[in-house]
Length: 285
Image (cartoon, rainbow, N blue to C red; front, side, top):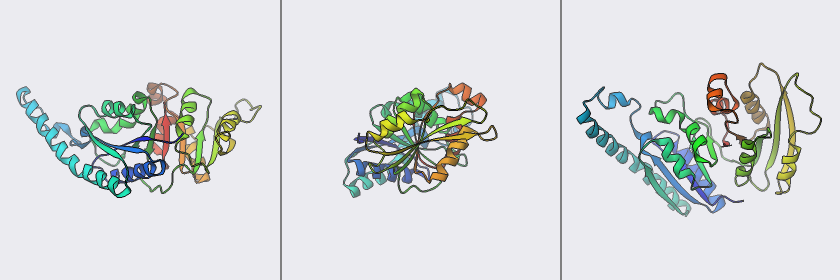
């Protein structure tokens, strides 16, 4: 199941070139078409109130919006030039799109027409337009397609050779596993991990054995594992710690198996991983 149609979300952030280069490498390895998508809303000033002069008169508002749109289009030109040069250098097929309007709506729309979309984790230390702060979560819930999320720090020379799968028998996890097949190297080492809380019911069989057998039929080297954690560590931290111990280069997991509101109020694995991820994560909802 090779990836044939990829998309990467690009903006003016310092990490955007890294996202582009990761997507370029994936496209090269798969012989895929690559679309560079630049949502114009991500190029707007972080403080829109200041950009619009506080509270402008209604008649002046459209002129201010038009000016911001024009400035965003101008800011997108060097991003497009760098993307097209990278395509030319690698001899890849691809195209470029700028997307006006609400960023999550635009990215989700275009993601539905691609096998995979590469996006960056929100950097809490970087000021950005309000819509960009929760773009990944919004797109994940709306797109119906997998996202490959790249951390805001670190370098990732390989993705998909040492894979950790977070397995909990949910629809979201099953979809993520299937979506990740195109990212896994044929010689990849794959670990299917099931987490359990200390004091819970004792497992009577090997967790993840059936999905491990399924992946083995795809020719992958797969191990099923179970990790018991106590209440002092969140599931997200347990996953990321296990990934670090394995030196995994990709974490595969379902996103928002519980409602987003529940995760916002009570905490949850999806939200925890999105906040603290230390390696690329393929996430599907």
